[in-house]
Length: 182
Image (tube, rainbow, N blue to C red; front, side, top):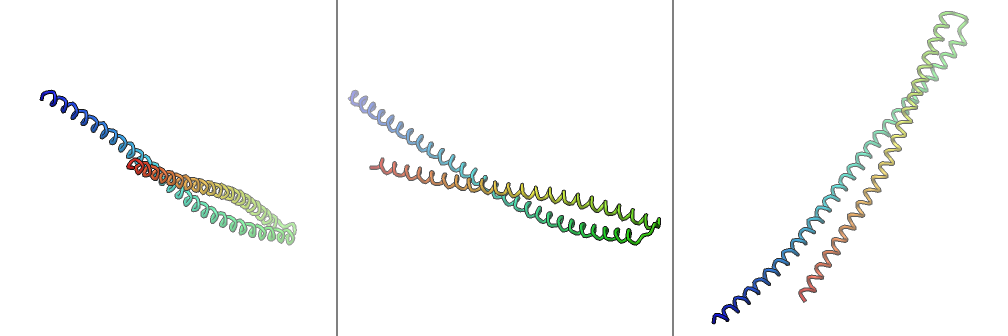
């Protein structure tokens, strides 16, 4: 009787040990699967944040570009006004030079007109430099916008690829589960 009891106890202990080992393997497998799912979820979140940041960057760049284009338009209008004003001053100077006869007051007026013309030409030159800077800035913004759009497309493709891989992995695991059941 004692031998049987010992034998039954040993068999029972080996059965419990096998059950514990099987349960432990099952838990490890489950934990690994959860860990992998968490990593995929974190990767997805990171990609969504990157996409949101890229969209925000594109929107900001578009707004800056629109502002710079408006600024350029204003500068071009002001320069055109300054050039028209310069032409008027040059015409006035020509009229003064034609109508003046060695009069000292007329000479003073001619000198004043020449100084005004020089200042106007200087302002026009400065305006043209500003227009050139703004045009360069617009070109840089357009290039940045194009680069950002390309990056956004790459991120979208990468996201789609990750989704596809995740779905394939899920399908493969389901198939393995069904094969194990058989």
